[in-house]
Image (tube, rainbow, N blue to C red; front, side):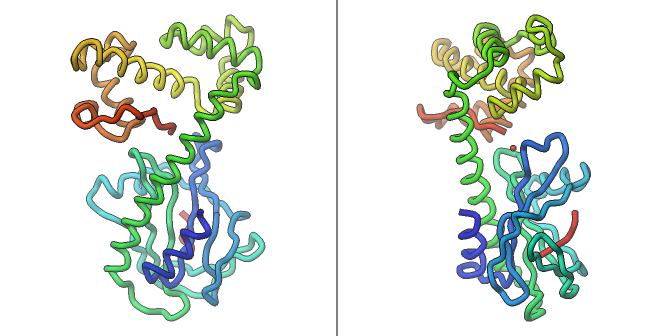
Length: 277
């Protein structure tokens, strides 16, 4: 899908060179962007899966907030134009570079770089607008695939270790129980428990707990006739502001906006600068 996305960016949108880098969820809390596919010095599709770089916290937040600030991309006036071959970066010139974020449900999924290192043509704003729309659609498609993968992981109960299964059972019974308390009952450190749970379940203990509370909220709000505050409190959220924040992060919209046009097939969504072309 990602290779075809790079090719479509060139063939249908008209970008001269494009490359996609995705944020690696397993590297959290670090912000590591890993290469997928890109474009070489002659316009050919290149395999860039051996390339990665790490974003500073400020750069990560700046990219994530670009859509919230009313912008669509980040424009660099004079950046290095690079090619990636066999995991090595080669500078082939300098010029403008556009970095378009892939954002879905308020989270940064990755970025698309594009430039005109071959022809040195000026930036075409119309192309960049189309590229931004394309990146938004692509981000949601990637997030949907990750959600399906996490759902499959959550169903593989037979493959869970006894420690993780105990945590799952305890959270299903009481989503408010703390990870520290669970780690003490199991006899391991809370840090090791967090690592083990994320490795086997694909989501953190906190996110799993939030998923359970959101699912409980939907059952409760149906019974209470749409009283959001009562349902949120009974679902286990400490305050409405906390519930609103978690709901928006997992679902991608506000509770009220969602409930006015919801569909019964909803499932909670999981959450996973070096200028280059």
